[in-house]
Length: 213
Image (cartoon, rainbow, N blue to C red; front, side, top):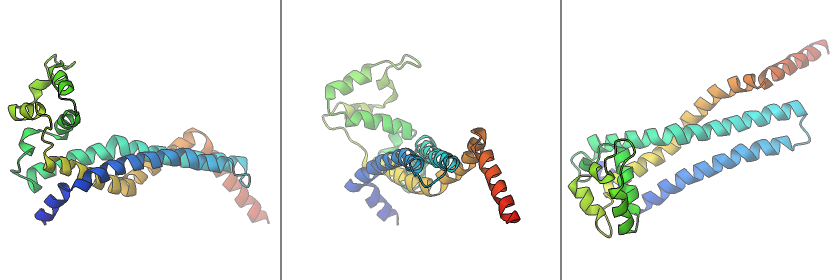
C-alpha cells in the first residue's frame, strides 16, 4: 500500500493533474457564477421576481463555493497532507526534514522553479519585510546548495505529497464541504437582500388562492 502511494506521488503526471484540477475548478466555478444567473435573467418564460430570486441564489451558491474552495479547502488539505506525509507515510524519507511545513516547501519550490540562477540568487539576498533578515537565512546549507545549481532538486516525494493533497482536497471539498457552507450562507444572504421574504410572501399568496379555488 505504502509502495503504491510512493509510486503515485512521484508520478510525472501528478503535477499536471494537480495544476489542471485547481485551474479547472476556479475557471468552471467562475463561469458558472456569471453564466447561470445570466441565463436565468434573460429567460422570458419566468416572471421578474422569480428570476431575481433564482439568479441571486445561483450566483451566491457558485461564488461561495469558489471562495470556500480557494480560501479554505485547498490550503487546509495541502497543510494537512504535508503533515501526514511527513510524519507517517514518508517518515524518515529524504527531503521532508528540510521543511517545517508546506508553506516553507512552496516558497522553496517557487525559487527552484525559476529557470534563472541569477534571479534566484538575487531573491535569496533580499531582506524580508517582517524582520529585516535575508531570505536565504530561512534555508539550511543543503537547500542553499541546491538553489545555487542550474537545476535544483524539487524533492519528488514532498512535491508529490502536496500535489496529491491538492487533488483530494479539490474532490472532497467541492463535493462535500463547499456546498454545505454555501447552503448555510445563502438563505441569510437572500433574507438580507429582501428576496427570501418576498418569495415566502408569494408562496403564501399562491397557497391562499389555491385554497379558495
